[in-house]
Length: 414
Image (cartoon, rainbow, N blue to C red; front, side):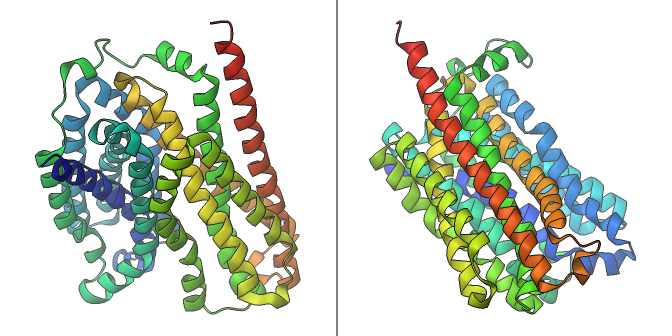
């Protein structure tokens, strides 16, 4: 019976992570259909994606803290319900701006689900299985990213653009039912007795070198992963000459590898320990990022795909290890805000990867219009981007090593 409760609880948290991730990726593929349906410009359509991401980025730390105050199970139930209702409102929206408003509301629910899913794992599974559970959550997040474009295309063909939002309704109801049935009831002692957002307490927590390094490393590696999603399509189409369908197929390899590697990565974390596994994951990412800039174009898709697989598998291992290391260092009443900070660091990495690394790529091509750039110029841009990416991963390795040294020195006098 206890095993069933653990599986049910983990199932509800996994489905929450899947829905939050799917909410981002499935909307992207629907933008052309939405633009046609609402006769809107590309600039206006971008807000369908941005409203969702901005809600998550702005609120994820605050809702994590709110979960510490009012009870994480209670707030997660509210978040799942809010996400589900907002998804229905998205499908029923009669105008673009009402759709954007519903997407912002959907992002609020997603922020709650992302922040509290990791926070609740530590109390829902035995401590020795935390790494495996974190790996499952990472897998579900990657599956959502990977599944979104393909599932979205099928749903649009079958049910129109409304289908990409309606799919969330039955899944949301299922997640809500599992969470209600299997998640442990909030205990009074796990809730904070200090009302409001404790800014001083959060800053004190960030003074812990292992925690602050964990947040920084998460942002750095997510920046690199986002760079693969930004630069990859241009390199595959502009330099290697692939058609759109083939580009999409190759681009799905990264999220697919992350999905497949998530659970084995979690088990490896439980076996080797979080710090050793995290370093191993960073080394794998560094290896992949170093190979990409030196691969000749004449090796084609295979020359791009192999180092990408190495990099993405390393990312899955690092994330499982880093999330485990961070969550095991804190007290129960801090899990919500710390989980929110982990989500914030990831979102900041996504934004930085899309903006800064995109700018590095454009600079490397030395072309005013990337769409008109020659294959050699695009290859140069890709090489510069991943040379910078390798530097960011090396920085993450250095931060991890320094945090251990500083932490040992702080503990030694005691």
